[in-house]
Length: 292
Length: 292
Picture 1 (cartoon, one colour):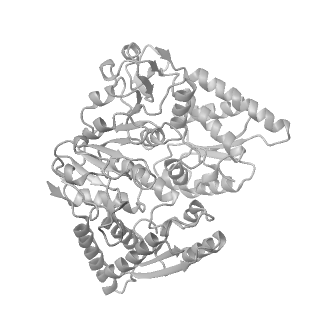
Picture 2 (cartoon, chains in turn red, blue):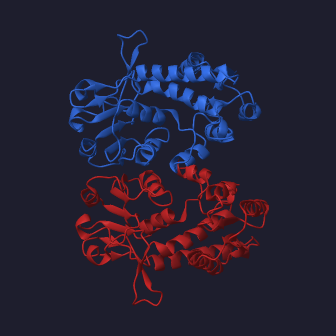
Picture 3 (cartoon, helix red, strand yellow):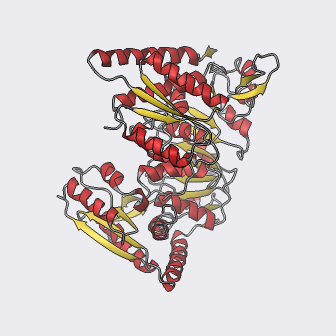
């Protein structure tokens, strides 16, 4: 069994990015610049944004953090987005989700210039991804593609089962895995209304679990030798931990690791890849890789 | 076995649209207005556009046909698109594909204001469709959804197999069939690199064939009682026909009809629905149903 180490892979990719940035600046080019907009003081969001700023440093990027209190109006936030769209010094930016309930996340996402949308959530990027055109691919699916590639998991012609149909993981993952230029796999998408879930999972050469139900995937749902990618990160109460919880994946790791041919742990699998993929998208933004 | 009659269904829908237009105009509203841009004299395109103009008449729409010769430049065509974007009297418009090789189809599609893109090919519409937001859905997948609904084919929790991964049929069809608000089905996408094609097809409660290979789906690939939707329309030489060819579907209709629970014929199945769905999208454009 191969343990797919997302932490180590992310470290390698960040080093590659830093090397590329060194090349760019050596010949007088500009450092890629990521701006992040953070609204309020949600603990999770604070941590994510802090880690994104740290990752920028590791990659040699410039970064800017813009903070608003919880009572910011939608108009104020949209004005901030407009300023960032117009700011030539900013190559890409993100608005950290979730936003307070009085603000329409979709309206904010659609206000972002798709050429700076390094989160890949704007409909133009979602649509271009679906039809195989160059674009920013959102971090989690892109991270999974990178994990598969960099760990030599053959996908072409294989049967890939995606468990979950969320807009940020299940759907884009299915879309990528079926496309010739990415996964080129036979893809099945399962969800809460699917029948024969266990049997369907057992048919997978590559099983991608993204339903947010701790330990849902048990050993009897995995074909011997299959690659298992665990996207779940649910907080489960655990008094023995300093924070009072631990992160639990969708896969019963201890049991499944003896059946799978390769598997990602939680934490340390898909998670560390996501911020790293945001960095990869920011590098692409700085280099105008997808849009002029 | 139920024959799913696309011609009759399309007729019914066009009558419903015409009734709606009569309501709109009775209270002083404006008739929906579709413009079509046709480049060159390709026989197929001529016929399609002619039928679109006829369908507009049946629906009580206003229609405008704009013609260019084969040697129109991309800039001229883009200027035409810009004029149609700006023309408030036009609710929706299409540029008939294919375009001559010296013109970038993608550039033309992306130049169309997505709020008037009744073909549903603009990345904004593709992307919004993928994440379940209101938008124009392209004609063939929308027509198949309508056929399934109007013929009482239950899709929720069923296994839907999509044969083919084209941008205009396979991919959007898979995306729609997996979404809770549309098909809510377990979806498998098969293509040229898939293994065990026959066996995978035989697992389908709903089989949607869109690979453009005449007669590819044989009786042994269909589960007894399954619903079979045939999107194929390949011209096959047939000296006995006045035109020298007949349209052949991807399904061996004569053999499969005895196994399937419901099946669409070719011609007369999915085909007649596509122009009708363009009309439905134009009605939606006239009513500003998806975009203000």
